[in-house]
Length: 287
Image (tube, rainbow, N blue to C red; front, side, top):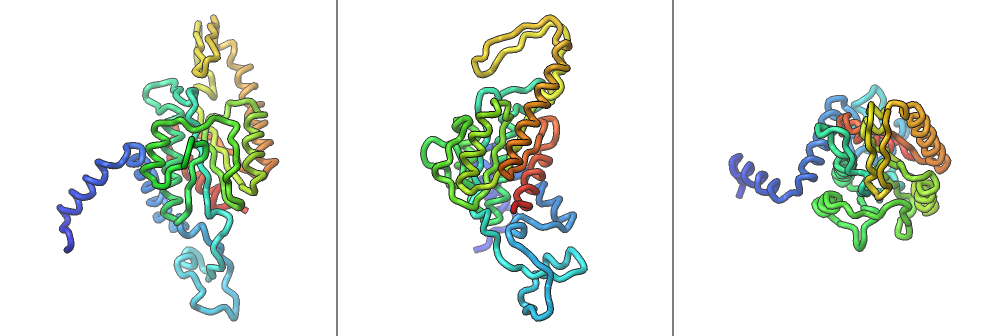
């Protein structure tokens, strides 16, 4: 029996009512991403997990990928499925510092991190990839709703992450503020890289953490039991703070590149789709 349009609408509404709000938001971001790909006639999630080469004389015509070839004046053959990304290991920072937001009009860092991570998981799942959540206490969730519920409540392990159960030739995507000391970040990257897994770090910061825009007397309160610091002229700290942040970021960039990983930065006042594009592009260009 086929449902009419009204019945399908009711069914869709019922399904949405049972979906975690985070998953609904992630589905929307993923849909926006896919709409942009189709509009630019670029490869979709399923396509980037295949390797293509130029068609050569003698190749069987049945091997031509007409969809890929339609985006250029050349013919391409889909040669073999990429073996390096059968599993994508995802970690989203859920530590107390991720609750920070300088303005109520912006999402907290943790909210944005979870949204981007889950939207990426939606795209990867559609491409047939296995997404495994890192840092769980117990068996990681096996479904998108389960993953969404896990990310929404937080509780993932903090850095440094261990990597005992990682399969070789996968990829890791780590999303957080990465304001930890460099030794801790390096230990995490090394633990994962030594398992034969390549990776991508996305640093998510509130714009205020980038520019320290405060003036006058300000009391800074640590979100992870660091205590409080009160200063009379916050603007006097801006230059030194900017230098420290730049040095730290340069250190993170250097250590990730040393292991063949990528590193990118995202601010919470920018659209979530920008972070998704950055990660998706990094995954599609892996070696």
